[in-house]
Amino acid sequence: MKVTELAKEFGTTPDTVRYYTRLKLLNPTKSENGYKYYPPTEISRLKFILSARQLGFSVSDIQHIVDEASLGKAACPLVRSLIKERLAETEKQFQAMLALRKNMKDALAQWEIKEDKAPTSTMVCHLIDSFEPTENNGGSHE
Image (cartoon, rainbow, N blue to C red; front, side):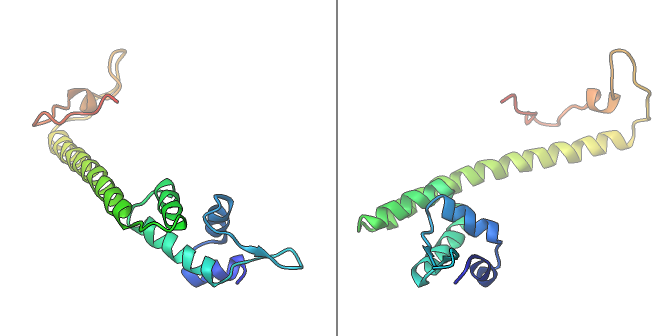
C-alpha cells in the first residue's frame, strides 16, 4: 500500500504517515519506481501508533513501547506504567482547565455589572485590573 492509500485507509493524512516514517516508527520498502510501499506489518504498525496516540501516548512513549516489543519483551508492564503517568498528567491539566473555567465564569459575572471605562496611563482595561478570583485559584506564574 502506498502512502496516500494507507492514509486514506486510516482516515489520516499522508503527512502523518510520512512523519511516522521519518521517525522510523514505520519502515516501508521502496518499489522499483521509487514509491514507498507499506506491507501488512507496517499497516498493522500504523494502526497501533494511531490507537496509542488516541490513548494519549506520546511519540516518545510509542517508540519506547515498540523498542521493548522489538526486543521480544512483553510491553504490557511498560504500557500500564506509561498510561498511569499520562492519566495523572491529564488529570492535572483537567483540574487546571476547571480552575480556568471557574475564573472565566467569575470574571464574566463580575464584569456584567461594571461599566465600560476608557484606558488611562496606568490602566489598559479596568475589568481585568479589578478581577478578583472568588477562591485562591489564580493564574499560574510558570
